[in-house]
Image 1 (cartoon, rainbow, N blue to C red):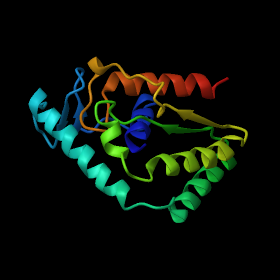
Image 2 (cartoon, rainbow, N blue to C red):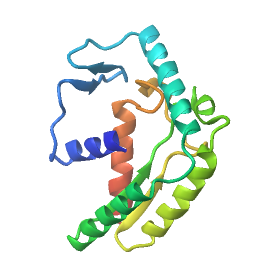
Image 3 (cartoon, rainbow, N blue to C red):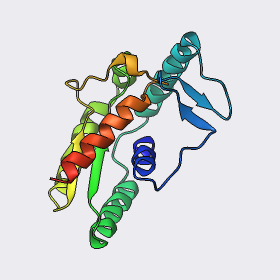
Length: 168
């Protein structure tokens, strides 16, 4: 979500891209001044990321109520200030999505989260954009930096969709 937020902020001119973290036009990823990573390095990053996420999901058994209350407060504050809110869920890299969530409580927790987010989205001026389902396809040519971060073209598509949906 934080990368999507940065994409939206950059699109509307609130935030300018930082030179130490970037996605190349081909979806390659660079960090702290690195040159874009090659295909083999990217595949290694994808596998390591999937392993890390899987390990993390194995240790989670509930939605963090503190984080949930923080999100509710943020949405409430934004609405009180007259801002619209888009709650966006994005997919994992399809090449490793099953590896990340297998034998974890992730599917149940995601269902609970979607139900809660749906409740928030019932608030006027709040929309839920769920791109996390298996019916969502991100073009592999747009690139993946790791198991959860996609290329610029996908981020741009999401931003355009959110703004079109939010301005109805």
